[in-house]
Length: 183
Image 1 (cartoon, rainbow, N blue to C red):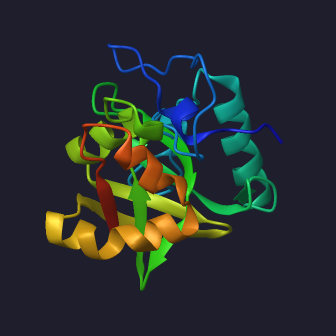
Image 2: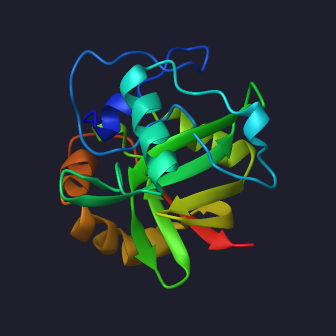
């Protein structure tokens, strides 16, 4: 399995396409908008990441229902499926798994970079997503946490991936916490 760092997957060019990062960053948070949804996001419309380590991680995860790729650097992973804000294509992104009841929380950290990952823009434009957690595929609706919600829920994310605190401290950008709720 290829090692994927969150920020690495989050690096995008100005036209919304993933760029190969110059350095390795944090968790499996790829802004290459990757997805798995048999309903709203048809597999025929799936466009794998052009960055091979991300595409390979997603393919391994999906082929094995997370047996391979379900744990990354001792942290659990999910596959977030989004619809590309510009392309309309299905995108799949491996991210650190954070649960809160029936909800999944995903952090648009991009390793503390000054801009948001592309998958975040996809979620804002098209909030109907799926989250694959091992073999379970969940139809969800994503929304950005309010400041009060972020204050309450951020510690849950940092407990799973402690570097989130470092990323927030190292950037002027308010790193969004996204709540994915069952549809």
